[in-house]
Image 1 (cartoon, chains in turn yellow, cyan):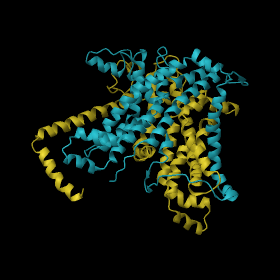
Image 2 (cartoon, helix red, strand yellow; image 1 turned 180 degrees about the vertical axis):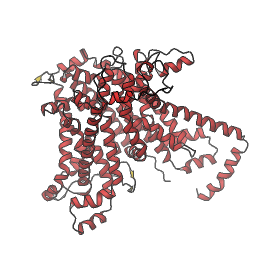
Image 3 (spheres, one colour; image 1 turned 90 degrees about the vertical axis):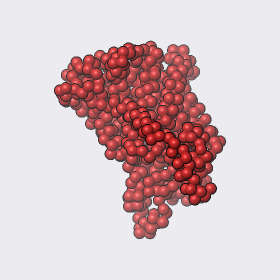
Image 4 (cartoon, one colour; image 1 turned 90 degrees about the horizontal axis):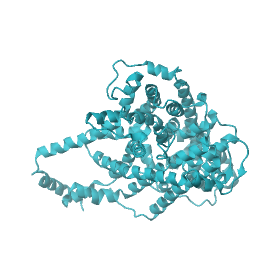
Length: 303
Length: 323
């Protein structure tokens, strides 16, 4: 149908259907709409607010005072106890924090860098075995993480890497199929003329990567970096399996060890402060980069 | 999962629409010189994928026929591990519990995600804010959120029971009750991934051309009818993608469940899903052969869904439309 017909028809149709309805019904619907959304919104904000309040309450109030009541005198000492060595329970979140930062940074830098190299080769070079290797990579995307945990541990044990930082980031730091796939899609779209021009100017593969690909592919590199960082920061099962001493705990394993250890449910204010310390970087990343994150999710679905 | 997306159109910022991406046959790729040029670029990831993905996948099958206690040499076990996991490690029970969790999780998750996406798919104030807000849990460390929810769901003293107390309701024992523990775990996971799933539906809804709704409006179709006749059929591909990724993800639930149940899968065996059983048999019980057999079992189930999805995506009807 032609555009003109639509434009002509729409106003009359809406007039016909809207005019008899009262304005108050429209308002009632609008109020209901925002009411439902606000209830959902409250459900999504509440746990964070509760945890913040709880992390600032003395232990005696953590169960007796309802979670939605803010602390009267914020007990900042909870945070210093959590961060340093808490005398009642042996735990040190500063160590966990630095371990997490170290492992996650190594994982992120490695994953982005090596994925980029591979993606460049797959997108921009022709070499024997290329498609076979790429298919192999794609096939591994079907393997659930947990299936390889047992054999991976066995391999790490045989390599004498159990309970080292290396073991925690190495499996993810040499490039992952998903990130390679993501970057390859982007690199393929860079016009060949730009790369040809760079090569005529005397640049080799490294030069093309540095001077052409990286500047043009900045969005996908940031997206890949975010995916890697969030994954590394939140990763739990693998660090749980491969590290068994306080000195090598990351935040997630430190929290779990504290929460499931002797006296489960005790010192919840300390645990909540530890949870807040763990969550804070993710919240900051989310606030700063949420556009990138939304885009990366929509890439996954192919839209 | 991503195998199915390999042929689908993607859109990247600054990159424009990507062509459907088919691999060309690899004849005449330039021989040894070309290989030498590409070699240093591909080598790191090739080592990584081989050592940390391909070898483990092969090795997990082998290990399921071996005895290993976490130290010392391997010894041959034959099918004994496979017998043991059903006889002593409750493999069948774990599969059942996992399936129960998936059934608790998926329908409610999908309906809520779709509902929210429809609500937010309009031009009103604050829609962008809510979209972002609902997504926040997706990035939030599951272990940390698990601890917070553990506290919120404490019987009598948690926020939920404090709240229910205001209206005179006494809550069930939540995580201490074998009836309620699993629904609580499912609820926490729904909370965590709702915004993530909503985003897929939202993107799907956005890609449906306005003109279809305008035409329906002219024909006098109500909003309700428009949803069932236009939105839902055209969301079919999105729906499938969400369902299958969610099912596969749910089969692997671990982090939240571990924290909420103190790593035990309790009360009793009521939340002992298969991933938790893999962990406990392997790293707590140091019977790695049996744990490997459980892993293969899980892999088989997940693969069944992946292949099912792949077949479905290949044979599905594609809805062609141009904006």
